[in-house]
Length: 202
Length: 198
Image 1: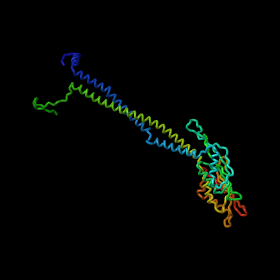
Image 2: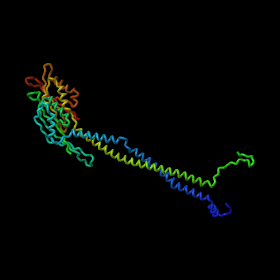
Image 3: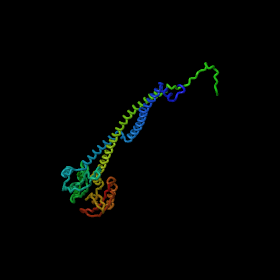
Image 4: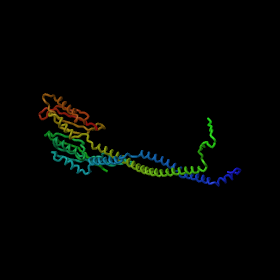
């Protein structure tokens, strides 16, 4: 550069040189790349990376072990089946005739003589409550229907009758009983038995 | 320590100093720009993949939460079902298997004893109620054995039979007395066996 020029003249002369444009363009290009591409890219990369890491950790925390859900579904189905079987075994239909039929069938072939068979009025047992609802409401009510029977027979036939009752498909409760020997024949017994069956009322 | 070069100036090896000429700087800046551009574009591309993974994870998280909710409801339902099973099983439970118990009793009773009355009944004692087995019977008095010791042997047999006595709390000999039955001297007895509470 020539000596003795003012600063403005020096700048004007310098700006006429091609290199200045190279400087300007390269700085501008660098600025554009850094400002619009590089820095946002870096910011987004680390931000997404952090978010991804956090989500993976959260997911791992809440993730259900493989097969656990299916195992619970299967268990629920098994328990439901078991419950249905219990209900089928425990509860009788309200039609008492069916029970009396079953009882006479149980006593069939055995040398037992039915003297009397008397169903009594149903006794309220308990309410199964529905816990799902806020206010506990009855899911169903269990009623017990007592049946008093008087029989005559020998000890073996009484034992067999009790065995059949205890092994019956449907549950029959042996509430009380008494076996008394006949005055004239000690091998013949008068049997009074109070049985109970359960009925479900929805 | 100073080094002295004695060679004439024209023979001296000229040491090239790394120079940064003014004209090279824009090229360097431009190259830096390209490097940053490539890195920036690579980062952008990788963020695309990251976003894709993130969306997949968010989706999976939502599904897992949904599944968790279902699982909680299944567990609750399962708990209710199990509770209901326990509840109903209480009604299905038999304190005593009577056919078996009476069969055992028949095997224990000696020849000289016969039962005249046997009952299983509920008894109340104040506010408490309990179930009990009552046995009434007769014992033929034999010549060589005293009636009391014969009865004692029978009572001990009842008490010492583990399978028979398992369901009873204790054994009480309520009453015993001698009497004549069809011209034979017999001992009448009355035994009470309160049933163990489940």
